[in-house]
Amino acid sequence: RMLDRLGKKVSGGDTSSKNVAAVIITANLPAFARSGNKIDVTVSSLGDAKSLRGGTLIQTPLRAADQQIYAVAQGHVLVGQGSGVHEAVARVPDGALIERDLGQDFASRKMFRLTLQNPDFTTASRVVTIINRRLSGKYASALDAGTIDVVSPPEYEGKGVELLATIERLEINPDVAARVVVNEKTGTVVIGHQVKVSEVALSHGDLSLKVEGAESGKNDKGERLVHLKESANVGDLVDAMNKLGVSPKDLIAILQSIKAAGALHGELEIL
Image (cartoon, rainbow, N blue to C red; front, side, top):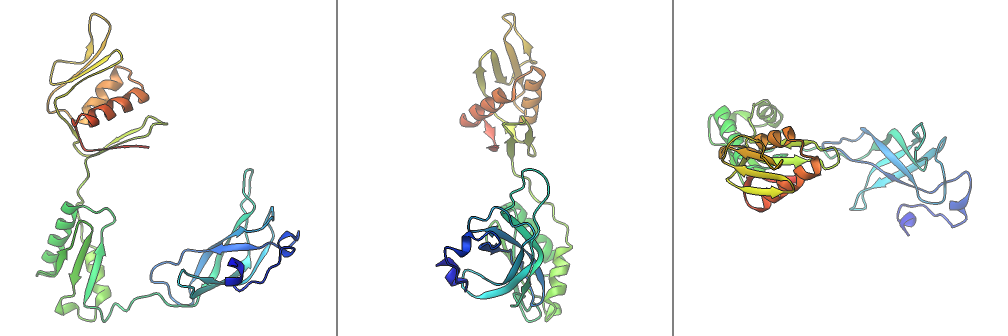
């Protein structure tokens, strides 16, 4: 049925032929695509073909979810070299010709909506302030942490591209989220800006942790001690534990426990 919707009438015997392969073609249609532009396509075997190497894709219309044809693909397929390559999947560079415009008419638009890649209320507020300062008026407003509407000023009427180019060149200092990212496999710890640790006491095996105290080291019983000041952040904590030879596995367990106790003021992400 799927092949029927694509306009291909294929019987069961055709898909088992040794020199013909039924395939699915996929591609990403970029924003602002125009008729005549070319895009790469991925070709994947649908039947029992073991290799697409040396094959040629016949002309095939590419439909979106709305069942409208946006491009037509054809050309020689390329399969990667080397061991371990899955030869039932191939690519056709510039193999699809776009037949329908997706571009927007910016010249006549009077309002634009900007979407932040990393939504943040502080960053959104800074963006609005800087845009309004540059345009000398209240033309930008934030709808939420990731959406900003900009009304075109009179001097930019019919000049939407110039307006967006002006906004694009503005320098913004984005807010950095308080986040700790730990890679469990490699033991890598990435710490965001000033992730604080509140007063807490923790015992993990032969390791004792206390925020607000003396220096780190070992006691008379050979137990490893980590003492940090109340103003310490996660970076100070990780440095102290690394000096005592704490393993990545133990480090992750300790950070999770501190987070569960509410003493780690930030997000903890384990990869």
